[in-house]
Amino acid sequence: MKSETRKIQPDAVDRILAQWARERPDLNVSPMGPIGRLKRCAALLEQQLEPGFIQFELSFWEFDMLATLLRSGAPYKLSPTELFLL
Image (tube, rainbow, N blue to C red; front, side, top):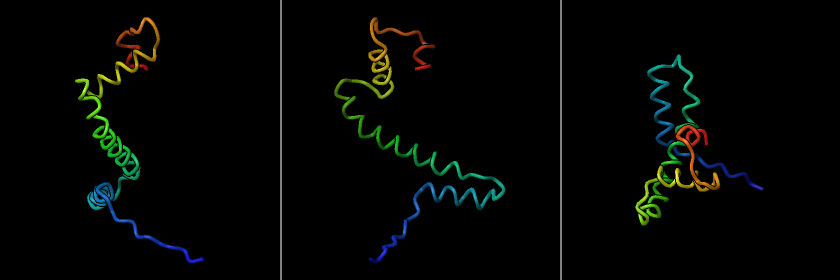
């Protein structure tokens, strides 16, 4: 059985890491790789969810807050601190 090797194309995060390595080789910026990719995934996900929110005239944060209140149970109210902690 032949093993297939695919060359992975560098992405924007790879380019950012290369820039940091060039400008500040003394810094360990490796955590920026997964964090940057997660942030990009989250942004893409929000773009996909946005049309569903728009039909109800909601933004992402408004939906998140309403969902938090709903899952908290009756009487469906929380203090600002409680909202922050959940």
